[in-house]
Amino acid sequence: MHTDRNKLFQHLWDNYREVTPSAKEIHRILGAAEGQRIVNDHIALRTFNLAPVGLEALAEHFTSLGYHQGGEYHFEAKKLYAQHYEHPDPVAPKVFISELLTEQCSPELQTIASELVAQINPEDVQADNFLYSGRHWSIEHATYETLLQESEYAAWLAAWGFRANHFTVSINQLNQYQTVAEINQLLKDNGYRVNDSGGEIKGSPQELLEQSSTMADRVPVGFSDGTATIPSCFYEFALRYPDASGKLYPGFVAASADKIFESTNAG
Image 1 (spheres, helix red, strand yellow):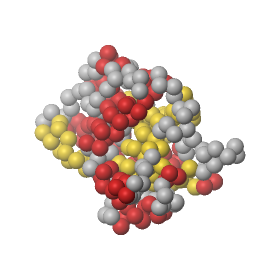
Image 2 (cartoon, helix red, strand yellow; image 1 turned 120 degrees about the vertical axis):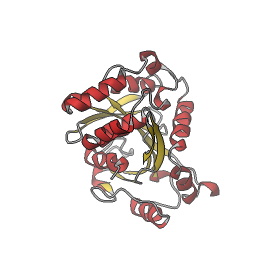
Image 3 (tube, one colour; image 1 turned 30 degrees about the vertical axis):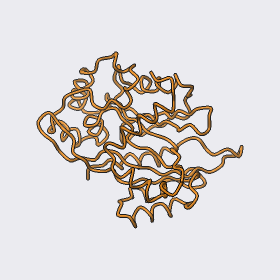
Image 4 (cartoon, helix red, strand yellow; image 1 turned 120 degrees about the horizontal axis):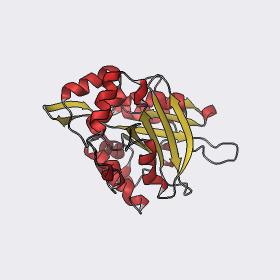
């Protein structure tokens, strides 16, 4: 496991950027070239709730770097459970890890997930590069399509494996833009599709967090029986408000996160 937090996030970023061509372009339109610092609010990771890759196994890569668990979240319709992790250093990105509750899914999905996870070498889960190592299994495009009928989340995970499915621009740290609405307009003006599930702006000042996101880029991915162009990763934007103590709220809003998951929808 990594001993250097910055290195881990740099590798996660490089791996994410390989399949998210819009990330570089979004940095450009936010003014990175003119000196605007782009600060990452959080990343998100997906997994199955199956040994050896359940949520806690992924979390160990962060708790070993001083992170601790913050909130927990339930997404009953999507059959997901999640936790977020934060670091005592307030500038460290937060981490949102979710897992698919496979036992709540169809027998067919359970079988497929078990067969995929069975191809993972348990030792690899402890390796430095595990969180950005991608897929550890062979999968046919037809199997991806089968999963897609039941769970977008399962299909995405089966196609892409272990990697950050999004990074998040902290709007609080931007000079030129102060609101989520301004960011969404900028994205649309530059030809990006904003995730409008549940509205383009998720959350509210009262909930101490507002979020929005692009719809995932679509890029070719190799399956064992050929290549198909499918949704990869997306970019999120977060604006946090101070809580009663005067500190920016560090948590997440389940109802908003529920809609953010849909940024990788294939439809």
